[in-house]
Length: 169
Image (cartoon, rainbow, N blue to C red; front, side, top):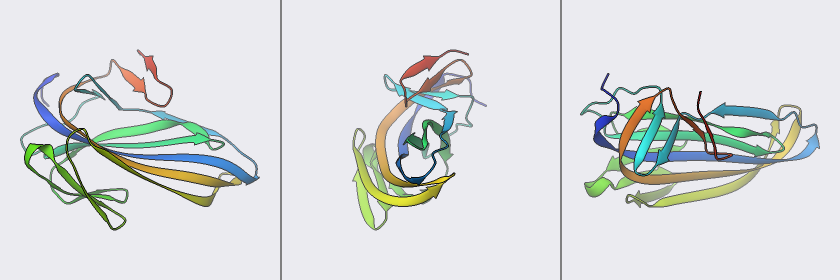
């Protein structure tokens, strides 16, 4: 396990899946999730806990799920060291990493190349059964290339992106 903060910078790429639900039939038993495991701040990736970082890491993938609206609220996220490509998270496929940190991805037949600092999103609506009701859910898939970041880990800081509250355990 490397010392923290790690001296190297790592390419950080985030896949975010936001689900906003409006109750259309039945009842709403809101759930709350609260497992944010990272935050990006001032060119630094702050990770709750630790990661195995070495020269085999191609990039770090931030996988984030959030819910809001009548379904409940909150964020669950984690950081995954990507050691080989292609790599699939949910339906987003990371195909390659190019010069300067360009990341090539595919989603649902759409192929993209994102340079550091670039992002892309796609939204669609679906009616789904969730808990005790049926919800009209707007799903937004967002991908963002944060570029090369310093990495700091430990158990001292959690940041909840959904409500912008800092907590110190």
